[in-house]
Length: 265
Length: 311
Picture 1 (cartoon, each protein chain N blue to C red):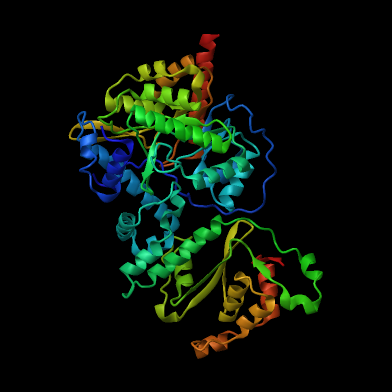
Picture 2: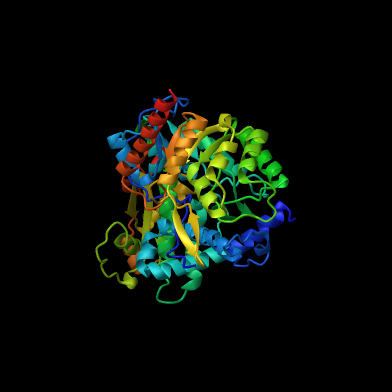
């Protein structure tokens, strides 16, 4: 008689690796071949996994169509089966999988859209938090602002991509209408996702605002964040520089009012 | 078998998330409030808003524990608000109690957090396994009915109960295969697990019916063997059928109404187990809330009928 461990290992190889030879002799036929009986479970495992990806990646699915999405999801399941009893986490590496499939071709933006959709998932499931208590800020003398460390809402997620992936994502979720044509050369997209009053908001960012928020999220002081926001990078294009005048007071006001900055230390 | 055409069993996936504003009132129903008075229905995310706005005429709700593991967000908030108005049961599908891997304490910790958050009257898991070697099938896989499996799963249930500080219910699963090494029928195994671990039994009558049809035993015999004192909840659901080489196999899809044969089993179960909290489960091709409430009302009518006869 096989041990319980041996039996389970054999069955799991049949379900996830398509190698049923170890499991077949363990199963009673009773009118239906053991292979078919195992297939019921193998199909369930795959279908449950793919359903989870369908729920996490609606825009990618719409962009590539049902058949190709399922093909990609099946390939991803074979290489990266679920490692948790909670299928919610199953899709975590799907963007990387898509970049391996389409790193250099005309679909190279797909993995970026997938990365954005995973951040959307994270944002939707993150902890709740109320708005910033303005009294806390009013207690700070103006001279003390430099040393403040602001905290972002737990659902805040920064996203940047080479392609206009926020526009692509927005055009492919929430509406069945035929999406507009988007020029892949339209330049980079930067955005901040944050949940506010139960709703997910997507704020477009200038590169200055992006650097400012990255700094705040990393726990740096307000002075350091302002410096990061105002700095120019060597690889900034002329267009970046022109589009990124950074106004620290305006940024602080914008992100407090939008429920992005929710605490201060 | 073609994957696309195959009926899919329930999964612990996230449902689409409706966005809505506002925070709920604090829980107003005692956690221990009886689930018995009326039948409950399985709670699905697409029904959250309707449940909150319409307060449907059902006794209670049962939610898949894993669907409310998140730190925050719309799902968790909605369940908190629903919990303020209805008794609740949390029903886990991912703990993999029968697995020979170490018990997943992170998963248990998340269950404990959900229990503390939502104060369910009942907490249940399955008599199954879904993982080994760290890899998960995320399905309810049957155990071999052996002495080794009996000792193993009983000790794991006891461990989980110790961790959670409360008794849990264990549900019999649908199965599509039997292991050659099994040495006892499922009903003996289930009863022994309950006796050894101290858990209660969540008896799924549809799963009994599916297994009885798939393996050719009499479902009534299963009912007759289960200790009436151990059964704390009953599940009713629908199933589908597939065919292999002319041989029918029933699949537990939870995507159709409860069939007549299962309603008949329910009558027999009410006579044997008394007025046990009853739940209508529907997890795929989910219909309107009214359809689920109508199934629950049907269960309530049968309970009244059986009680009237018994009185």
